[in-house]
Image (cartoon, rainbow, N blue to C red; front, side, top):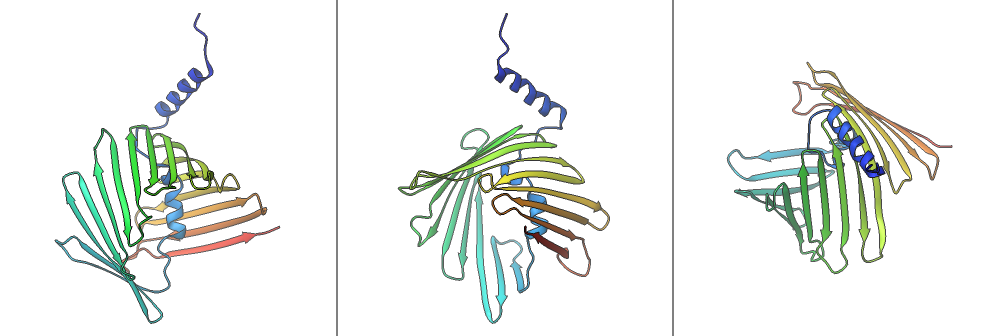
Amino acid sequence: MTPNFPFQNLKLMLGDILHNYGKAVQRHFSDIGKKAKDLLTKDYNFDQKFTLSVVGSTGLANGLKKDQIFVGDINSLYKSGNVTVDVKVDTYSNVTTKVTKTDLLPNTKVACSFKIPDNKSGKLDVQYLHPHAAIDSSIGLNPTPLLELSATIGSKDLSLGGEIGFDTASSLLTKYNAGISFNKPDFSAALLLTDKGQTLKATYIHAVDSSNGTTVAAELTRRFSTSENSFTLGSEYDSKATSAAPKFGLALALKP
């Protein structure tokens, strides 16, 4: 009689989860809780901002006017076959270049990025995508690189993953986080353990009314080291009067 090892039970359990909770989808660890986080934190701007794009060109300019100072950058994107080159020049004449090649190996994407004049900014990213899994790895191109690795398994409905970072200069772990998310077409919920296990975050986002794009999101955060709790609530909706969806938010922190 063949013994039933624990890892065989785990394999069967994961197979049941992937079979019962939706079709295959390629999700990354950074996608867990991302929709709610973007609604609550992204594109809240109190300064004058403009975007200029020229149809038929590869250029895109973004600018921000703060007080009497203008800060902006220019992007150029070039694509040939499965190779993409993205070049950005910022206000301080820093040139950031990223070269991406897809399908160097089956189901992989490789990207190399660097910033001029910073000769220690080079980084190599390798991404592997499987119908039920995603693996992302990154290594700095310098004598004492920072190593980062994240992995996610799951489906369109359920995702489970983690990430870890290691600094070769200090031989210390820079991060280790884990998360799980449950997704449906009109809502998404996620639970994240971050800051090396010191912070627990629960997020939820719900599309309330598809006719006008009304969406609400909430985040509850518990910091174990300080016993601090915080709650953030936000909403957005589409308006024909503006080019971007208006956002409203509220944040509350409770300390012992």
